[in-house]
Length: 416
Image (cartoon, rainbow, N blue to C red; front, top):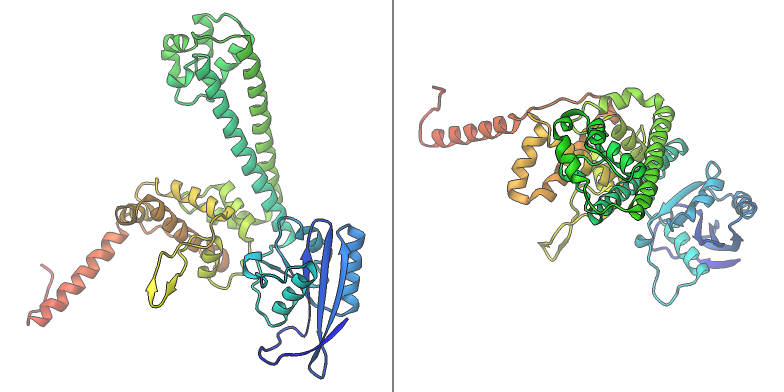
């Protein structure tokens, strides 16, 4: 316990606050208490990370009547601490990049003291921590995305295996994992010799007329080694597809109360039922932590940053490099610009001509997120402006400019 004279340079926002330096096995805590005469008292203690130790930490904070705690967002190590402290004290999660300490004074105790000092004067910016139910939605969505990416990887491995064995099914069928492709792959794992009649029985849809070409495509060097590898790949792909469907059904079940909002979000081009629920899992169904749409867009990283020095503006790249919501919105934007007679399609092609496709698609993601904000925050419905909305705006601006020029020359512009 240390008493220091309070420096009067900065105003005190939190008279009693705590800073936590969280690691995998140990937590350093520093509570700063401002006394009535202006002096400060530091309470420093270290705890383990087992649940009983975290409960001791919580009781210690409650005994000191500490209402707010700040800690770094170090991986997932902050989550056990948040699980115990949630509902008892206010938890401020801080980006470690924003609170760098002075070099040469780096110890666990000093880090906790430094963090508590910043929190005391209100110099830390809290990260968004959604409610418990929204965090559960988020875990389902991110796990499903990981399964989908792994599934795509195994499909590419299957295609590579076929190339090595001179099997060219994907040169005939546009989708190797369509019904016809799957039937042929199962046939390859079950039989050594395949006849033309077997291939005809496997062909479905438009590929029925290409049975001869399909038969030629499987005449390669497919040996028992390739058959063993293909069987394992197909089994893994089927298991992953099953898990993806299970996670999607579970997400639909636990977000059933948000069906009305999901239905409104589904009206936006590029957004379907699943992507609407995935977006809700990232930002929540209320948006109480985001007073304006601009703050939400900045948090998601879909708007440019500011970089000005000595009156010169440099490249304003967004400081948010990777964000799950940003990735999701870009996927949605690519689907939105493919819809004919839509505002997003027209806006994308105009921006693409001047700024390139990548910046243009990020701008469309920005506009989609602003529409999502209005729908969730104010309960409005999506209104499609149409492909010619921008043309009408351009025409109105040109007419206004021509009228001003005509009036300056002493003429009055009237419609023909």
